[in-house]
Amino acid sequence: MIDTPWLGDTCSLVDAFRAGDRSPLEELDATLAAVERSTLNAFSFIDADRARAAATNADVTKPFGGVPIGVKELTSVAGWPATEASLVFKDHIAERSSTMVGRLEADGGAVPFGLTTSSEFGGVNLTFTKLNGATSNPWQPDHTPGGSSGGAASAVAGGLCTIATGGDGGGSIRIPAAFTGTLGLKNTYGRIPKGPNMVMASLTAVSGCLARSVRDTARYLDVCNGFDRRDPYSLPRVDGWEAGLGSTLESLRGKKAAIAPTLGSAVVHSDLVDQVTAAAEWLAKYVGLEIIDIPVKTPELSFEWAMSGLSEIVMELGDRYPECENDLTMEIGFGLKIAHQMYDIKTRGRIEAQRVAMNEGMAAIFDEVDFVFASTNPDIAFSKTGPLPQEVEGQQAGLGNNGALTIPANIYGSPAISIPIGLSRGLPIGLQVLAPHHREAWLLDLAQVFERERPWPLVAPGSPL
Image (cartoon, rainbow, N blue to C red; front, side, top):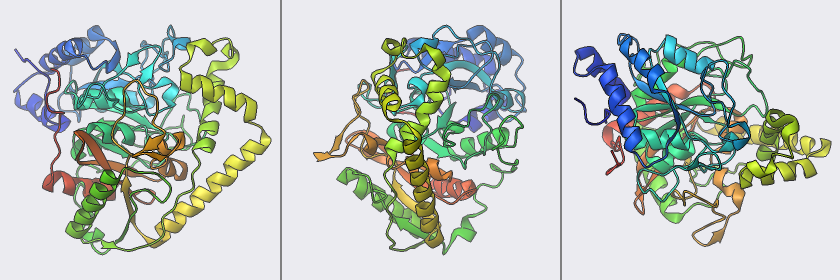
């Protein structure tokens, strides 16, 4: 009888299955019991019967064979709720599974068992909705795990499951990863396909996972990456992510890096600036990177990012809006009202101009350096019920500050990773490393150096299991 879910990483759990040390069904039952006991509110839906059937017949020779996996509730699983974390769609059921979930099941052998909570439509970095209530950070339950993949991060850091799917359209993997001490990779745009029924919208959102280790993240890429016809922007398949871990390190020696904790535009707490700078300097010295001083200043375009993203929500709501306004969270309701009042052809022109400016600015930075080291978040996790902070250390920052560090990589489409580097005032913080397009392998190798030499806790101490 197993009392708690596996508290190591996913790859070691698969090894335990293969060695006969525990079975997928035992692990699933321990996971379901832990979720039932948990006060984190990390899951909005559980399908125990389907999961038990899959665990009973799991093929542990597959990469994730028998592993219970949480699925972000904005990702479709056939027969499961498709709510977008919104009261408006509380009765909707998905007709088809996403390409990513299909690959996790068929190619990976994973066992999806439930939906992890998210912010409504993935719109803010706070997992608190009218449909599901507030999700807690396992490090300090009165704080948020972030969003929009907040339930995924809470579940993984809280010891409920070893891995969970995520999505990142403005920082929605990296922000909760940093808030909860997990690893969060935002892939190059198109690395993991988003079909079927792929919505292009602002061309910023990517799929991925919240994980406890670098090899878990690499294995996830092995299973899920590759072109799919239902996502015309998806990239050709690349093999060997896990097998190739560490293979780029020697070639990274001598490459150039800039340390810019604020990216030149965000207001960041001084303790995070100090810790991020120290971690970046240590990592650069260990790997042999050359730190150079260049001006790094990304355009502030949170308004433009929000306006372009709201178009997808307008499409999904259709003629339900504005009658459904009272069912929406404050942030989404306010955003839609502003968008309907202000969005016109001139606004669209400004959005395109700002995107051009961001792309040119990011390209100019990567003309000079191979990596940029920054903070993942402006500060530690805030209250789990909000509101979003508008100041940092007494400095006025504004709502746009909450995504100012993560949005640039989404607009540009380049990869970035959040690596756990320690605590500030008892809560985790992350070092964000940005790299040029298609250089996820570089980021994974840098993260693995940090993981090996300065390991982070795989589960939050005192998690309520």
